[in-house]
Length: 295
Length: 146
Image (cartoon, rainbow over all chains, first blue to last red):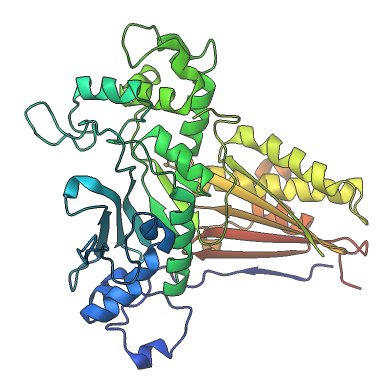
């Protein structure tokens, strides 16, 4: 005897624009998500209180930054919030000194067309580590982290120093903390998930470890892993003829990422684009497309 | 207390065997489980995943399917989450199982098989993905609760 079969589609994906956040709005259904745009339309000090919740406090205090005032011991501003009224984006950056080159944290969240949240940018750099100018050409033009143009000499040095493509400095090793905090922050806003498009194979692998699943590209990641095995199409293209295509690179996340950054996927008619990942709030998807990986 | 298990695989046919084996590994020795019920669950998951692969991720580079098992004392709750196109129940054809086999339309039996194999089914499309929940009761042979 069947009990019941229920098929429903709720809630609707497009959340109504609730307008400016007010006390009366806060008193309504607490499950309705707030958008970045709504937060950006709050008065400046309210907005600052809310966005303070994005930061794990220990990420700031380890650099001597006051997690409430966002200043150094000398009362200099170290954290910067860009959240213009009516904008659907918020960018938060932090640096260890007044010199912008000491930036160690950058995070941009944005509303998407379904009133979901996109993580457009996350940078966690060790500000004391050597900087590699893979983000600009020899004549100073932006490379968009090597996606638009490439500074091959800087990239070779970065590879030699153990960085992954797209990195200008070694990482800060704080991503677990930051992603847990993003989960908390977005759950307070009423969101159940957020999305991103990984810049590189290495960043996709990191996001897997942080609990993301794939909206698009899971099969591509499986294909990549298979083809980097001895005898595979990608493995056979690691011909040691360039710094970016050495055979040992098949065994590591970074090595594969550099070869992919160098265009090796064209071997089997694929490209590193259109990969999309999702993090469900409070859930770890358990994806592992490179079992037993060495970073 | 219920036990929970999870496996996530890419949405393509080669993953179906992983799901089948995962279900067998965690459910075969459940109290009240038998070969027939285990086959029912595997069949329902096979069909649901095939729908996700063929329709949910149609035209997309396939994303993930997350299979969650919640093993309780009298029932098995199976959740399948994907991030492709959501399922439109109204667009699913109702197969004519009475028609002579040579006159039957190809396909369209996935939902029918799932309904025949499981005791309850729920489907939701939400901000964090499409979720199909399938329940199999184990304490009685007719599938009902005690």
